[in-house]
Image (cartoon, rainbow, N blue to C red; front, side, top):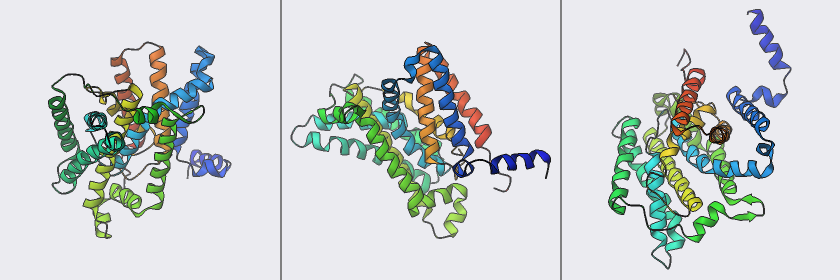
Length: 330
């Protein structure tokens, strides 16, 4: 063993127990968050105010819901490119259902989420049973969803506004001073942590991501797990669209376009391997917050949208170089 390796082990041994157990990628992401906050505070002390931080968490919650579903698919070693128009479909269908009156406002959110889950099931069936590459089938699902929504709206802006219940869920307050959107994201995060750490489904997702063949030979119904994973991604994408419609008071054409690349970047930035089988949900939370803060700083710098997309692309490339390569024995 080299002297450098011995020094690294010695330094690691002196760290607190929780730091020794922590994923380096997660620590790096949270370290970058602190660095961004420090650098932004040099520009203006308002960046460290409680109101600003809560506002950023509120904005991050929409991306966080979408990224939670994206992580399930990426852990399998797949990708979901249907996010943009599945988000839009969920938002439009929820607003449309609310316009029927009677039970409309009550079933609005379930209708939107079920529409997303339906698209996810179709994509998952194509990946799991027809063996179509996830990149192709989810891209096709995205185009189908776009076509259906264009037919539904006639190519014009939707006229249905978000019902009060959806607006309250996205912008209201159950706890004074704490936006509901943050509470919703926290609840979904708790469910995702439970799913990944306490259920056989979560263990199967990690197993398939590491080796689908080995998972199958060990008795896991890999095709069913893959299909359910895509359904979860679709449902959470649609739910993110519903929350976004509540935040904006109505759905809009292409409202989900700005969320695909950030969702992937947030998951990968948090240390989840794009090849599957490795990742922590806490890292995804850190990645979402980091991406949101980065967006805020770039907005203050008045960087154009093209520049932001370049930054996201560079982030994904760098994190792939750091965490996306397969180990030699894989």
